[in-house]
Image (cartoon, rainbow, N blue to C red; front, side, top):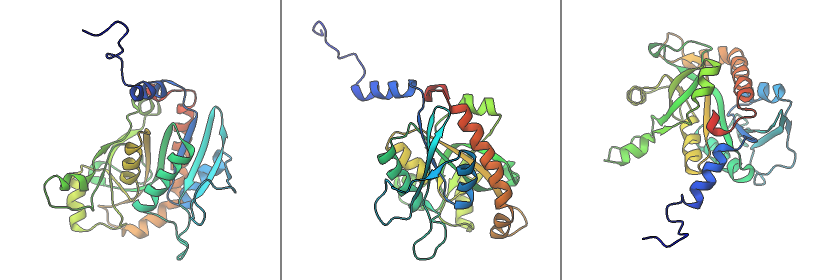
Length: 267
């Protein structure tokens, strides 16, 4: 029998803190964006300014834009240009690093990964479609050993935001992530196994870090190229990038407006 005043039935302190954070209004958002072309329309829309006193380690190319919008403190994190080659630091390694660093330094209530993606017409995707991601997995981490194979796939649920999806009338999709723009035959088989509608180079890595550090993450993906279509992927991606980033920018604004004034549990 528990002694009088024993709190053994009460939730652990960590769970109580988690429940409290779920119910307080969201105040700090980090938006992770892989490419400058994707980032700048969002930066301009929310009138964010570049942080000249970067909170990140000296020498890294990572860029933080920040500002306030309505009741929200918004930081957009772009991994920057590769110091040697001068191209956007795309892919899973940079995205995981900046997500970890942003969570540690900025302590966000919510992460939004916004970016372009390839889509599969066989799954109903078209150029310019914007999806909210329900599940993230990898398609190029092949480890054919029991249990390690599941680790390689790294399947994770994205944060469920049913009210946001319903209110904004957004499509839901599963996302598959890999470090190549093209798709090998082995990749294709893994993507089919992942039941993915969209394919990118960052999402599942961001989902891994967000899950590890217990920060809810929403993924907004806009389709630039049809992977199972007739055009070469790189050509179609570059052809549609500017127009599709405009659709992505609008979707991010809608998501931010919906989030404003709400708690995580209200999403």
